[in-house]
Length: 121
Length: 135
Image (cartoon, rainbow over the protein chains, first blue to last red):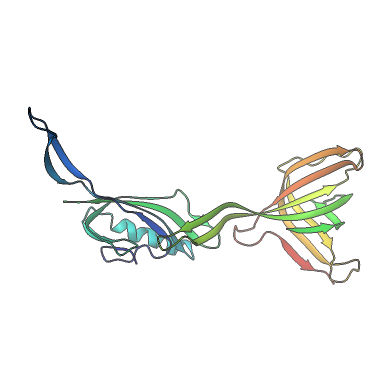
């Protein structure tokens, strides 16, 4: 089960994570008489994770509470994100939590959302 | 969809509509939500958002009759039975808004008018279509 900062924030509805690959930051230098380039490793590039999902509740009040719980952890602090596959991503900060414009009301009350995480130093 | 052939005593906004061939009730959704998760290919959440009830009425209009204007609000009522007997008759009613009234001409049937009424719920939650048994 996915979580952020040890909190079960997303289990009310389905959600998916886009998991990043690895990218290094490098600088390249050339010099006369050298084949190839001189590569300077500047470290791994920042990890960015996108999560898209839907909060689901039986009434509007419960749905707002689910939304508010995520809003509360959008405070700039670093925390550990556990994705759907059990992958652990440390030092992640929620940089955006965007919800759909309207609550969808059908058999349930639901709200689509998108969260963007960035790995902090 | 429910289809009623030859419904009796069809009225809209207090006026009787004659020459009704059939009335049908269509239930439509405004938006379909299908959500999947990371666990597998099947949908984990399906919901229909915005449910509309629309009555479609086909009738042979009177010779000098003009239909009400789209946007006219009123109650639609009619009586229907399961079979040819009067047993088990029900009164169907709903608060509706007329959204269209179009007349077409065919060689065999003559002039046929199709009227569409969108039902309005009293509170946004309860079904706007009321069905009441008649003794």
